[in-house]
Length: 95
Image 1 (cartoon, rainbow, N blue to C red):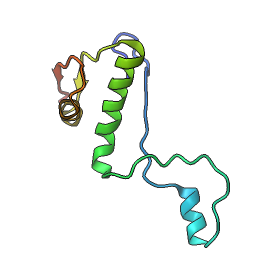
Image 2: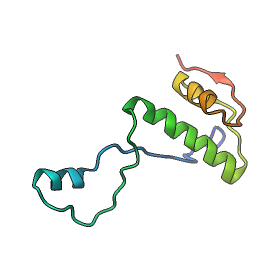
Image 3: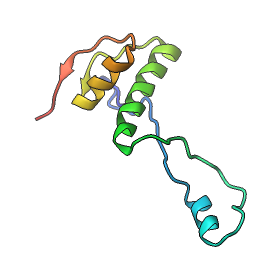
Image 4: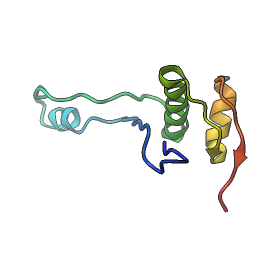
């Protein structure tokens, strides 16, 4: 998420569906070595971006009391409306 006034990254999130370390261990029939396990998504890959957007808006609202005034992209708007987050929305589409 990028701040309108600052132009800087103010929040970010990731969704990971696969763990390369665990997959390599499975291929070699070995136990995975100790590693930073970041697998955090089991749903459809299509929904990853929308889920990250919703999470970022909720985090900004809860932690900082900030409200999102501009959203870019149809997936983002639909995700916010479906989850009923309490944020102010203004339609803004890029051509």
